[in-house]
Image 1 (cartoon, rainbow, N blue to C red):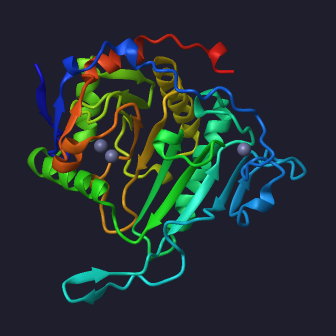
Image 2 (cartoon, rainbow, N blue to C red):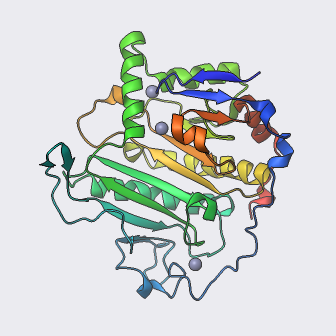
Length: 339
Ligand SMILES: [Zn+2]
Ligand SMILES: [Zn+2]
Ligand SMILES: [Zn+2]
């Protein structure tokens, strides 16, 4: 029986309709991915082609300046927003607008052309997280920016235009709608219960168990109760921390290992699916510590929103989150498969 579920934070309704879809093993469509070489002489992100990107913003090396970079951050050559301009709102009749001010950067995650996060070493994933943190801390000094979104597109179907493993970051002069919905939801929940809904979710999901994908001392991965997409996965710090960028770097090793594990489970269960992940962090200004609990949302792109979803904003999810959680929990993945 299909079910309507209301997201307790955003109050958005989602339709869970498991019987509309074939059995889960049919999701493992072979997303062709494995044929890439480790180096591509035409790739602007491969070592030796540094001149093909705009000048480097930062790079992480293993200590000796003579060795090559391990993680490299550059401005996006084709930015969605530009650093120059003002955030002054301008009105033309009823229409308000402002300059397309922002920053758009690319975090090149490894020199290896054909890697995925799930096959990088923990140390390498940790370097990527450190790069996220350092870029957020640097960009947040610019008072024009109110929000920084870090995101990752894996695979063509997820919007990636280059195969070489990379994340992106966009600094915005406003707080995006999706994040505002969460903040409003958190405030509403807080006003009623005087607790953070994400903190409550951590406790409740651990006690229910059925939607838990993985757990480590400080992190939890769950399939949200009102998941909009099949295999949508949420990674949360168990303790209430509003900002990813304020996390102590000693916790990054655990988070790197945990993120890699969750993505490895997904890669195994769904045969290297295209996916997006976004890091939802607290806005840079104007909010207090109760307003946000940072988290990472992973959405495999194995279903396509159609007319009903676009027209109504109501999603039909054909895989109940309890089922996807069980699949991800039970999938066998081993260190030996993690190269
Ligand atoms: Zn490359
Ligand atoms: Zn919390
Ligand atoms: Zn979120």
